[in-house]
Length: 132
Image 1 (cartoon, one colour):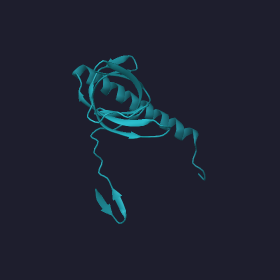
Image 2: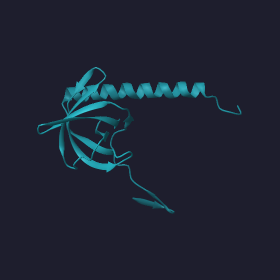
Image 3: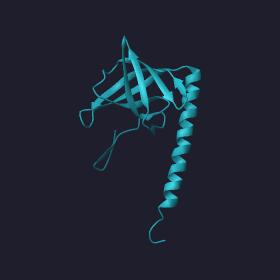
Image 4: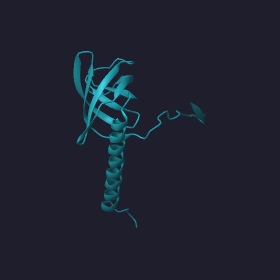
């Protein structure tokens, strides 16, 4: 952390940009299965919204549907914190992912970035700047 005046700045630790999106996600560990929603997603992991806390360090076999393609990375819970309405947010890093699934994820995130850019352009064109 670096101090500038009275403001503390935390160093960004993420290696990959995150994209906000809400996708259903299935996961499995031992014999249990569950479904939760992603909050954001990157090449290195994701933040998910769950009904209860997840155990930090737990390893998960994930099954994600990205539009019409499925990827199955293995992930690890790196943090889990309470959020609103008795829910939890948890961070999951991808530990292993096949080359083919990595290509699918890359393609999906590029398409998501393009859609977000187009949506921002439409938003700007429909909201003129006052006083111009």
